[in-house]
Length: 225
Image (cartoon, rainbow, N blue to C red; front, side, top):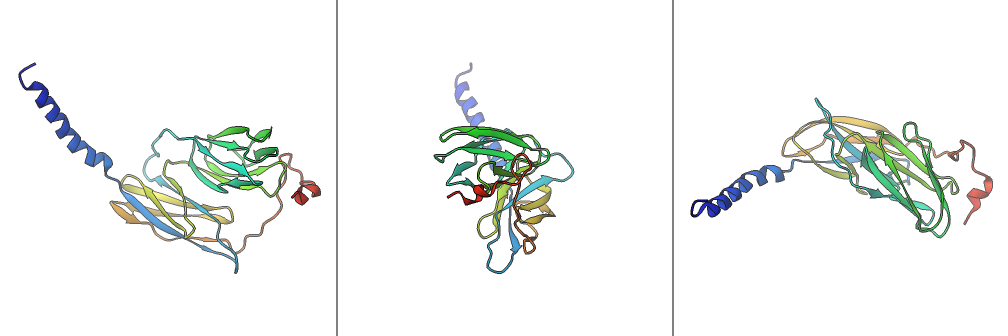
């Protein structure tokens, strides 16, 4: 190696890093707010928003496992948005048995009965809206949105949301457990604001769901403390 060669190599590397890092770190930002029409005296349900690129397929990316726990006979969080292919674990943090299942087309599953302290996992390999229940406790419900894109987020209590994604044109979808999904198109360049996404929950009426056998829950299940 020529004298001073190592120093030249280091200097060149740092120069390249200086050129590459701003490009890689540059984040185009899309923000927006979902508004929800509700019945008087009711709070809107959490909403999942995801962005699909127009003119091309969404890039395949490695997903990270997430957790949807069972505690105090409830799922937490109640609403979860994940990229398709995500493994979701369902730990039983109660001191009783639970049986997580779904009858949603394309994502039906049954984790079976398992005790306190145990955990089971389900990978959501098919895009779709998945309604999840417990076969023992009918009050336990959750919604998992397996989005066909890595850019997915759940709104805050005020309906606000943010996605960091490459510049381009996208189709936005907003999904709630109480309203029909709505969509909009947006062009992202730098810091952008999404068009209005408005959901209507005012006609929503909660109805009893069936157990994993497609049958009504026994009356005693609704009387459990």
